[in-house]
Image 1 (tube, chains in turn red, green):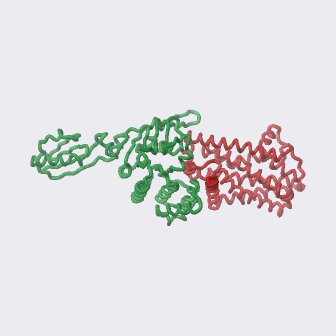
Image 2 (tube, helix red, strand yellow):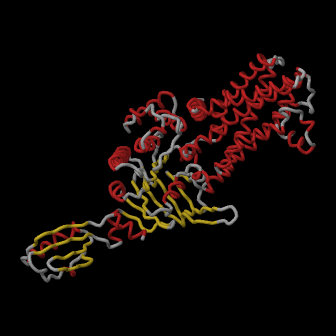
Image 3 (cartoon, chains in turn yellow, cyan):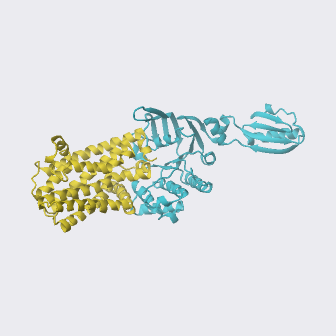
Length: 269
Length: 313
């Protein structure tokens, strides 16, 4: 029992190290404040005002605002997961983190904790903004659906963040652009501003492979939009679980490859 | 004798280029036996494979071929276990730019599982040991090169490693800061008995600190031994310059043991010996017995730099 508790404490400490790093870097760098406040608010206000100008009905406005709020939260949260590696790459200190006895789980759990904090902040700010500025009640479905929806969003963020890390470990720091572009690609595919039913069939197939599509459908169902699939929440989580398992395995492979090719050292130069 | 590092036939190459692949062999079958508690230096010209070797030992690079045991465990199968007991410091210190000295030490301490009072104690101990208290709250990006280097050294002691890998620890430092860094390293080795493997371009540093030196060039270890052994192996020897009162006497110096050569010019001569400490008394005895008067005598020891040039050239 004592050994188990010591092991658990060791695991928590190592994960906390990554949370500590992300937190200190967040509070010391102005650009991270922009990520939480400036870009999400600009995006939210411009979409919300466009909806007002277009005189959209409340249900359509709900559709769009759910999309924009979710997207902003995912973008901010996934950045934190990617930052667990990128901060080291930008500092040229990658080797110091990887020489230590830490695993991918510590990277992921620690950075995701801060990501949830930052993404959650964005989510709640925009949720309040929706209510105050555009008369949209995000809490109408109740707190349980909100919690399940947010969990789906943040785990989706983790999945995107890990993918960015895999790309950086494989292709080098030129792949860091993925940290900002992958989410934009999702914006196009997941039905952030429109239902995926209007997409060309082959694009819709890709959209159905992205868990975020299912979580959006789930939450919008509370506002009168019938989901395109049955058991959207379960399917979203199952898909997500599958991706996370695959990605963690791929990350391990990418790390091994980076040690073989010398990429890990190049990321420190 | 327990070995800290035992390597057999290490090979590592790097491939570059997208379309036309270029392959560069960085290590070409390196064998290494470093005893526990030893202080070893790895010398060699740029691109010789020094940093690659250190990176392989620290498990940041995987060799294509060869076996490597670190602290008695196979690096391939026990990498995680080994990483708890080793650490690395690079000459060009790079850490998270926005973190202060204290935060950086705290972060790396946590990566090694230190928490609570133990972590706080370790951080304070390192701040004391490396005289970093005045900079504890200063961000890394605002530190001078010397202080960054001190942080790099203190960071690599955060887990009390049994094996310490130092990659050019004094590169780019002012002479007085470099001297302090050397003192820290020496004290660490003497007080804690940590096994240290260091690469350096500074021959004086290697001569002062390292008990054994391995010369690496083109990915292979060309020579190995104490600085004295290496000089002997190359027959570089020491130069004894003697100026006589009057002409150079005719003495059969070349027949003496340990004499590599003799050059005579006017009233002076230069004798090349294997070790002046051993040979000079005999030479002086000979001069005294022949009543030869010496006007001036000077000794020029061959340095590790001469050895380096001889190997790298």
